[in-house]
Length: 275
Image (cartoon, rainbow, N blue to C red; front, side):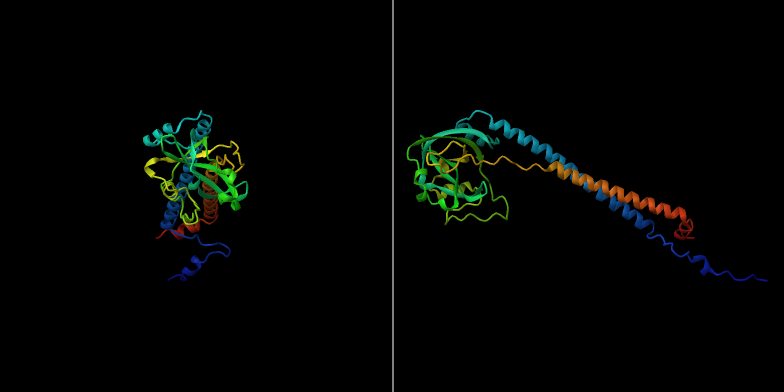
């Protein structure tokens, strides 16, 4: 005689409160690959920021060293430009006569006040010119007629820092220069030179930021060069590394709980294994 039939339904019914393990071997492998890729990306970003940190520290050290060097003449700076050497923040001294009619105005803020940096061509003894950032004037003093005392007519000597020209607008968010209103939003050397009526071939291909030596008329205010370059790369690196550690911690906690559930319910292993 046959015994009573066994119900296969009863074997597959799980006790209440126990969740069926989710995902099979393929899903677990894909999840592992995704987690490893994300971990590698986070660590890579942190390492990149550390590399940027070393680069920025070297740049700041180089700037500090250059600023304390004795000034050279413009021919030395011009030779560096020709050789492809970085000229940023190198002290320079030059003598000549300002071409006041060629003033160009660069929109800027200084000590929380809106206004302009005044770029004025300086004609050297040999006829060449160089654009000098003489410093800041308030917005309402843009017109030279409001500050006639700032228009020297005789020979002057300017000591300052060499600044490189820009090859293109630094960002799409920067407005285009308004040549008609003589307002510049980025240092377009070619446009400044042409608008000032200068010959590009006879104009030195860089700028000079004048130092803080007081102007006889107190305007423009010199010494406006910015040196406070942001250096947040260590903070960024710690953020990326911290996210990587958090990912490891969360993944480890998940695996720990998963194994704990498996040990508490050995039958789940049998159900996931095909007969």
